[in-house]
Length: 131
Image (cartoon, rainbow, N blue to C red; front, side, top):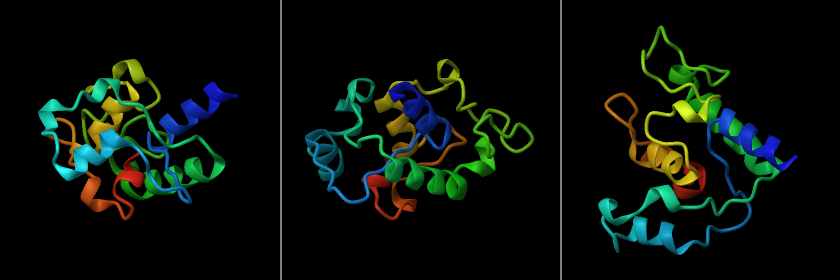
């Protein structure tokens, strides 16, 4: 069941959210407070501080539909007619900027390549919504 929820989180936006509990994670605080430069953060080793719950997955699904389907498609497989190199989110091994939880977080937060913009400032709950 846990694997199913993880894959569901990947497919529906690779974002999971914590709605009721505040984000408590020193690495995210350092990234947002400027204590470390972006180059010093090892995104590959970051872990998601947000638990997989029905609420967080549901919130991620809403954000995915609003922010991500234009390029990644409603099924997460990529809209080849819109953006030729949008990652197929259903195959993590083919992610262009890495497939660890931290690398996915970085791609959403900071952008990835030339076609995916950073989304941190476009999301209402900032860090929570990125996760």
